[in-house]
Length: 505
Image (tube, rainbow, N blue to C red; front, top):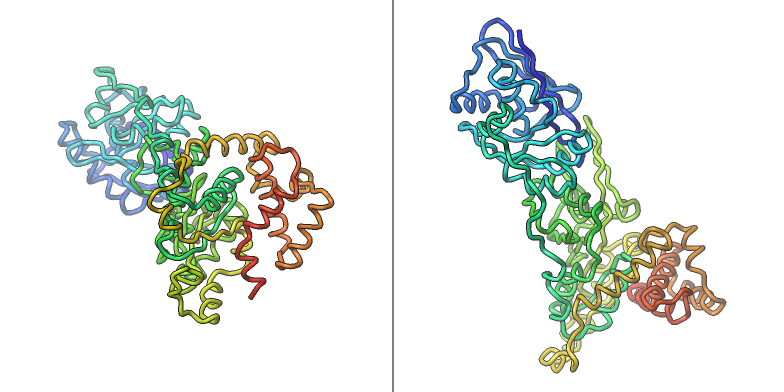
């Protein structure tokens, strides 16, 4: 009787729990059974593994083979365990060295010819393998992604025969390095492409500096989507930890993953027909939704009132807590969701209310009903409300006399202001706790009177009151001021356009 042990990893949210594959070969009628809570795709591994071994000219043992995947209480899904099962059978039958398996982990799906096929969620596997002090063998297509885990030892293989040759000491697999060309923020769409809209550009700069949520209100075709698409170009580049977090979520999402863009803040723009599970995540085996795919980046919701109201309401929890919990009968998964919300909407159902063309024929009731699709509690969580009107024909044709500001110039100011906030509290201004707001956002007597008047006139909630203080703190940081002055506070109050509209109705 022979026993072999191979280490691999499963997938549970963005975690990669260790799975120990134990293969036991004993006398008895020829059979292959897999135990340890395998799902259908894992049960089918026995046919893929048998075909791969025979086509690679290995001997498939005509004995009783038992494969145990421990721990048994973690569901196992997908074809990611094929390579581990194949190596376990080869080691238990003495066709490869079993001692070589002690210091490695492996993941990969096998074709019937023995080729290694890519699987999802390899980056979390590489991170955990590094912490365990073991080398990871992965399909060549996944190697670039796995190499993003700095310090991890990654061996890239195309075929099962290459893996076996390496384990037997016949031919060493090459270590994968993360030295490929990466895409920088400079290669993104630039703010210089947008003519005019200086008030909107200023608001987006403030939003980027403090990580504030923002909504744009304006007729169709005025440039709201164009401004939002260029917003990532003025954000600070992701830190190593942030980039790994975002890359890990992208890795487990089953979406195409480009390792070259791993330092660029994510930008997600779901269609307004998206369901609540598509937005926050879900499924029998929970997958991340748009709010998690936008982690450490931007979630852009165009045509905000066209989203189903129940769908929008699910945003309230992640906007406050920065995470989303998906509960199922058999498991509970947490996904991080610290995103920056940028939204756009028309002022009325036809879109032309207040436009110079005078085409709007919507009644006040229709306008109110349209805007009521966005609940007050959700709107209260958005710090900046601005209007984006049409630019003049001359501005559209010629642009600014001295040229438009480039994203790189705006980004330098944003990074400087963000650094001030990080040195102060270790977080962007929008994330300050109430006690930190009280300590770092102190106002003069004139400032207090101005804010109290605005609160009374606009009917602001306590949440909106604190968000204006955070906004004023960011504006003061951009100006290089230690204290919040009345002009900073006035600009912050001026960014609450929808509050002014609501109070006027």
